[in-house]
Length: 207
Image (cartoon, rainbow, N blue to C red):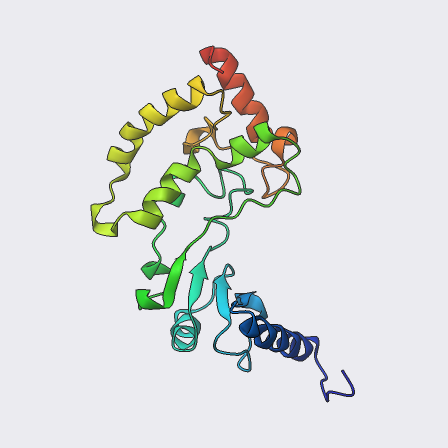
């Protein structure tokens, strides 16, 4: 850092990211950087990954510099509990309301499913299903055509399908079932919501 004249770690990070970006360009590739790692000196051809919420002014200024992938936390983080990112909250997510008024600056949306606390496939299924169906409509349905009540009715078909395929989808989706967890992460099979979900399955005699 001293040789480069840097006094902050963030300056070194920007320098490193820009060098990697320049190298990737020689291979016909693009660099993607989490938005908390982007600075005023970050190369404009680096794609931003928007996960930490910023002010509308910050978003507006950034959209004039680069393209973004939107994966706002916690709504689009499916390793979070359903009390933090409920089915309805995921469905009602709106890119424009997140500050991205110019949709041409958005390459797309993305949900995250970090697996530090996900110890098996059953726990991963619980984290992702049925939120993935709500996310699909966020990604591919025009906002004015979205209707949560209609979506929720249509979800019955997918619930039957998931049961037939032994997919461990979450029944923890409405506020009355939200449970206090020790962590914002659902903690997989160790989490309170997962355990309650198993109880509901037994009560309903479903897979």
